[in-house]
Image 1: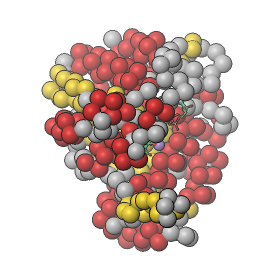
Image 2 (image 1 turned 180 degrees about the vertical axis):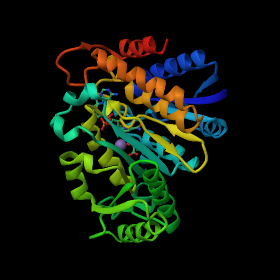
Image 3 (image 1 turned 135 degrees about the vertical axis):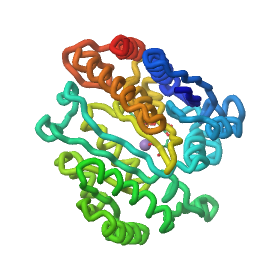
Image 4 (image 1 turned 120 degrees about the horizontal axis):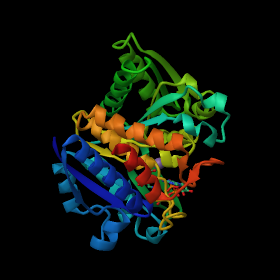
Length: 355
Ligand code: NAD
Ligand code: IPM
Ligand code: MN
């Protein structure tokens, strides 16, 4: 199979872990006789430094022509003082919007070897397998107006959702639940927000088309609590942009580290942008200790969702599992014994299992 993959390393540890994912994809291509070609482009702070803006037109063009896109992370203190319109994060939001990637799939699946790496009790985490589906191109992140008023002394952001935007993400939720454990939890704040009341109404309407899926509504504050007290009650969670952002970082605690979580940002056809859930981690950038498994598992999601290469995706996931079983782990995984290694050694361990 021939595929053109755009790599957007971005900033901080994004640049370090991108090398790991590329090496893994190259190893898979060699083993299974695929031809993957890679093109690197600038985004985020890296693009600000090179072009003065976080999302140059050539990056957008390259992504539009690619079969799939892999992103590291954007942002960092170096760009904290630039004008809000050209912040690194605007680059990431811009590419999601430009490509119409409205659904962000964040699987929260723990590895057995990491059960004791979580601060939560093992018996609480055991058996949990959650897919968070986060709406990605609407809500507070994109609503207008967003501005300062009264000489900078008040500020407004707008939480806006249209029926179409809610319908397509809710459908994604039901479709995903149907092929998993047939349970959908819709998370909102319908006791306060009008947009949540519309959301809940649409979930109820759609539920009639999916009688095989059991639906539950949870308010976001209670959902945040239940995620870490009884995570195994969840199957698929569907929620709006900001709630999904927050709940997925929280849910990463179940897996032992934020550095473990992959994600797929997709639309209805096969094109997708794959990225770890974590950010550029300025506190550890440049030290060679970042956990590369979130982006490596994101590369596996790319093979599965964009290219239909399920066997190859499983091969990567099994290699990661084997390394963890062997005791290999990076510093973010609070494991007492085993071999604590850096980004490159962890990547090499995965590559060993792919041979
Ligand atoms: P962060 O996710 O970068 O880091 C949070 C904590 O988790 C830090 O202590 C970090 O060291 C640790 N961590 C994250 N990924 C890790 C990994 N792979 N291995 C080991 N430890 C890891 O969040 P933050 O510090 O709040 O944000 C830093 C910057 O990243 C900000 O500019 C933010 O906007 C940006 N950000 C970008 C993305 C993205 O590009 N998708 C996501 C989140 C945050
Ligand atoms: C994420 C990040 C981004 C988001 C930021 C960097 C814009 O936190 O991908 O989870 O909030 O969507
Ligand atoms: Mn986030």
